[in-house]
Figure 1 (cartoon, helix red, strand yellow):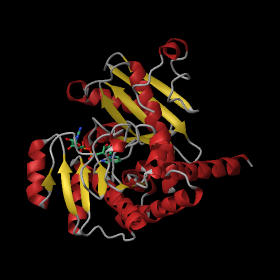
Figure 2: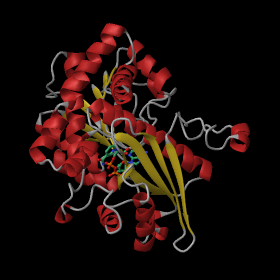
Figure 3: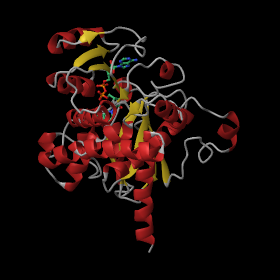
Length: 366
Ligand code: NAD
């Protein structure tokens, strides 16, 4: 489901519950503060497994409808990410409407923090696009319901290296299923987006002897990283038909779509970006038919949430690493299930997550 899908009739008649991305969300909180100019929406999708945890994103949106759609879609995704990873957390997310470069300040973040605090722990926030660790430190001044604060303040710090490690584990599992070996030595891997997660992933792959091809819109970064990792650079958008073994989307969502899916030569897709399939059902199915092993994004990019969960539960780096390493086993199990039941891997992962939630729901109601 994409944010572009807007139905003008429902916009008028049912702007919230009629949203295409509304999926039995438990609670949606609209936050407004005249003094600071704060306009935010907190979406709590599901709290059956635990408090709803998910980052806060700040960006300018085309319309309030787009902001609502984004928070509904993202909070739902968090429910399934936590469930498949075996964490006792629900799914939530928040969006602040505005330009983080010009409209973000400490007063606004504190006011936002007080809205989070008013939910008494049903929602726990963290960093997302447009936010920095420092912003979470400011939120922490007014509420305990925030994770991802600085290591110097007792937090788990930057989640990107651990996210990259989880993606690497998922990639190795997909390689094992597709090529019969988990080793990436000699494999050609296209990494699209060499930001925080992408760079750390490039490092893991090159250290194992994989050949990395990098693509980004930031040419300076491309130049630096190509020297650092001896990686081959490909410029521009025309990258999907490249002759590679593995494609790792680490920049944007919806890069697997009606156009690109027919161009792909890669036999494995494993990357960090959220919502990689433009249409989860249709493109998930098409990848299966094309015998392309797709490691579900919400499963293999869960390292970041494992990292912030550790902050809540108070466990250390060793356990974070072990839990993230386990993404390898879960991904492999998903591939086996997908094969056995002849269903897309995305569907298989989703079904397991859903079952976990249903079991807990039954236990709570019995
Ligand atoms: P980042 O902003 O550090 O890096 C993104 C990179 O993608 C940048 O270098 C940017 O220039 C590049 N980029 C943007 N548009 C592009 C395009 N059209 N083509 C090619 N490159 C493009 O972000 P990140 O923290 O590395 O996260 C990468 C992805 O993983 C995002 O989709 C994010 O939502 C997802 N993710 C990140 C984490 C985490 O812990 N950081 C956790 C889960 C999911």
